[in-house]
Length: 117
Image (cartoon, rainbow, N blue to C red):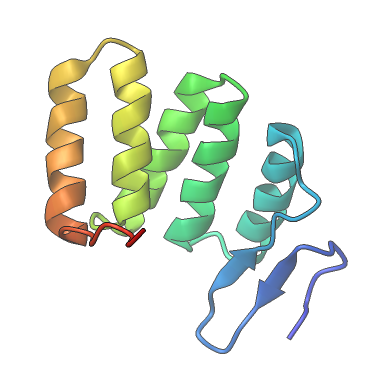
């Protein structure tokens, strides 16, 4: 069921907000969509992760890290937030923290099968 005037945010029966990013080709566009998602569901960890990803793509590292931290405070096992934060902290030269986050992301998500050719 669509509940937003923005064309890319939908809400389903489980309370999940899905960002349909077709048409949002810039980090700024994604950031706008995620702000709307957070307005609709401020306690949804996936929305905070998406905000972090958008801010990260814009080079706003401290704000991106804060968004990932909020997502992980709401769900410490959110694989995408763990992985994305690991990339961010690695880019900032914090290799030991990045390794710890990647290890946790792999433990949470488990091994993924390689796609067949």
